[in-house]
Image (cartoon, rainbow, N blue to C red; front, side, top):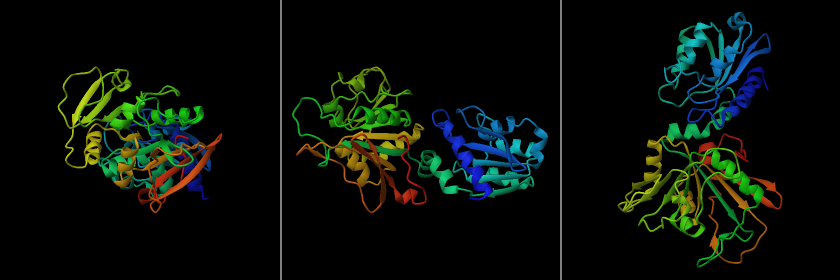
Length: 360
């Protein structure tokens, strides 16, 4: 590991502190080094507040050292006026002679412009230090900007013999998750901006799709109900969190905190849902069921990560677990008590990134 990589790793670690506050902006960390010592560092704490570079520069106790320092930042400095002034302008103003950038910002108003502004001012700029790791840090932001859709995370629990539920007519759903993995699932909910289930899951499981076993905000609840047959007594319609119903029918009545969005069910609805969520600025979606909905995302190639909890319990028969494409994803596993949580990543989009149990 060379010096630039060492300090870029520090940027990445700092950036992760903004996981719960930076969105929809990316997580960014910055370090300022003079004579082999860190003299300033910062990260983007919250959307609308100062960026990482501003916080790093502001933390330097002896500003005169900036004129012979190197500034490291995990993402290209912004070059436009948004909620805050351009970071590139501040770097030029402080006469920092060298800047090391992890990766280029894919956001159209920035992409390459911040780097060019620095170079036009005579600043030496090095780009691409730990690029794969810096891109992976903000993979949700990267997918949203480059593919014009939310980042899609799939989650389910399955028995040792490969079923996610028993065949049943009424009654309660089979509970497979342990208290520990249920808590981790709720943590994952806080890290996604929306959560989606199909009609059958909403009807049979009656989930709340809210955060109860972790601290954080409720995601936007999404449900697919083509004919509007779901009863209004379900937890999804209790008004405790905003809910969007994707349907092919006209909404017959208004429900508190519930919005109906009409889709064309004569064609594939998943791209339509992705387009509607992109328009709303929803960067990430957690899909929690059911089997047909999960498999639909997998078969369409509309997924980025998947978490499959495997428990040492036999159901004998029931609803089969989704089948992952073994040729286009890699998996790692982590043990929680007697359960195993398998993590899949789509290698088509993330072949250069190391597997990570994000959220777990």
